[in-house]
Image 1 (tube, rainbow, N blue to C red):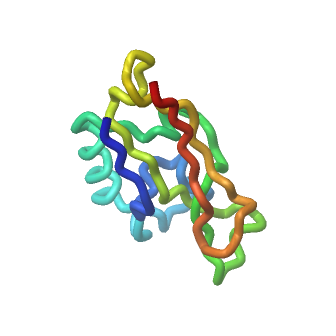
Image 2: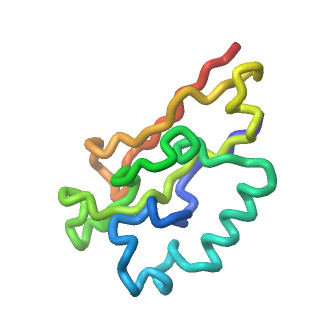
Length: 122
């Protein structure tokens, strides 16, 4: 099993952005076409975004909010923090299995919140 995690500074799809219809997004760092395509190439090489795999249509789950703009309380955020895992971690017959992934937005102290990955080790 392979697990790559952290602040990857890209909002992979429009589900990862609070204002996904805004015209300026194509030029905003972390949301450009080039960044999103590069991220997708990583996934296409045998990896999976654990949160999005488990919650394919979930909206409003962000891990970053601009503190200068006061965006945390109204949940105007981006999902920039990820657990990227090898696809074998999603199969029940593997030694390490992804069971859930979620954010803890109520935890303050940074412009990012903690993200959690629940694993089962067999």
